[in-house]
Length: 293
Ligand SMILES: O=P(O)(O)O[C@@H]1C[C@H](O)[C@@H](CO)O1
Image 1 (cartoon, protein in one colour):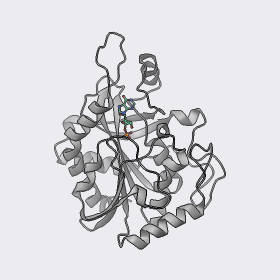
Image 2 (cartoon, protein in one colour):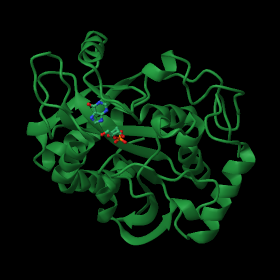
Image 3 (spheres, helix red, strand yellow):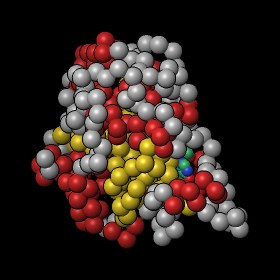
Image 4 (cartoon, helix red, strand yellow):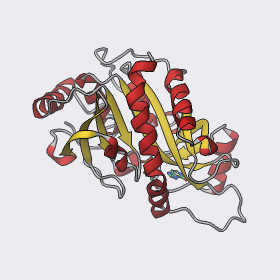
């Protein structure tokens, strides 16, 4: 693979194949569902049985996690009869990875036979009605880095994965969103369930107040530093996507507000909601292949 920071794709089809082959040779699992765990949400894998864990550093071509709250492990397992793979920790532009590296695992999952990707993250609330601890089903996203030329599909298009100009108006599966709503209400989460628009910024700094106000005007309900590249690449290669965002902090929209956000707080809220999110994810996986297309 080329060095970090390439402006366009730095991973060849051979790179993807090599990693896929390595994983297929090291596990008997053939996952149908992949779960990408956001900051502080690695515990989502705890609901799986028959677990087999690989450290990212031991998987050929895999990037490694450099951020607290991202364990850096790929966990295979089963939920009921569904074979799944969990990424305990994902990759970010702000770590110095190219978007091709950030999204590398998504194409590996596709080549392994995954059909559905469940992406989770931590985000700050722009919508003033939201509360810390809310779970937001992602209805749509704004790819702000994409507007500035940072896009995971920049560069020559590999038709083996998908078309040059993918449609993104239905990136988040309606069926899966409906199912997530149903599962959350059955598990008693309706009181803190939302559906909204997630905006990706590159980070690593949290937003200024002027930036936060701009995001509000743009129609964002929450803001974070991940997910959009993975979802874009997943949609490009025909995977079904569900996105769940945990609201870990209120973004300051007001110069008189004294609270200052920090990453420890983000991780702490993740811990607080990990158990309930784990139940939601486990239930969703056990039902998603039966109830949706
Ligand atoms: O990796 P995600 O998007 O879940 O985590 C958010 C964005 C930054 O990585 C971090 C900031 O606290 O949380």
